[in-house]
Image (cartoon, rainbow, N blue to C red; front, side, top):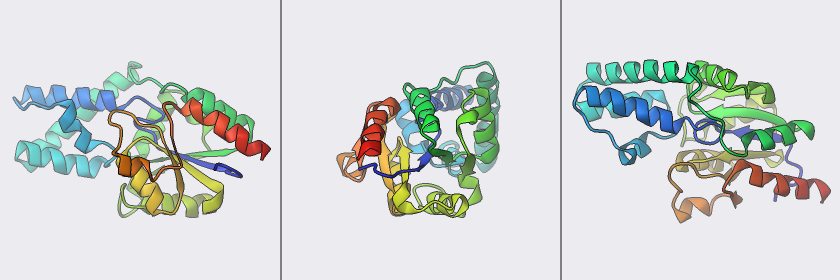
Length: 222
């Protein structure tokens, strides 16, 4: 299943890092200041969509483009302050898998829908940047996830071939992006477990990233 995979593409938010909780809390708190309720169920629609889509959704929610952008900016400012204070945690099993992949000379890349500067800042603060060869952002392509653009661009930029590459994702949007690019994808659900029709598109569905290690070890001995 994972035989001969030498290039590993990772989503960031909700997969490597527990950022979705902080994105939700900061948007909720800012919206509450404007008298607008925002629930976890509401936040699901914002996951893995990229910041331009987030601004569009906030604009629709609040009924004003100016207020939507203001809410986004205030929430990001609050998010960044709390990020600097160490409130974003590395997801369970992430370090174990990244160390294993580095020790076995696999090339690891972040392929995230987030803005490039956000990816660089967040991976540096959480000290996982050292494990990656490069960082690829949804900002660098015409269409963000669930379109395949991010992964098609990642293949081109890294000179990786599809058969030698596997993707790790946590969301419906991410799985669709990878599959539509013709890549094998391992699903490690975060907030909301994708529907069975989405899970069926993955080569494996795992509770944590560390659970991928036995699969990769087995592949190495085949």
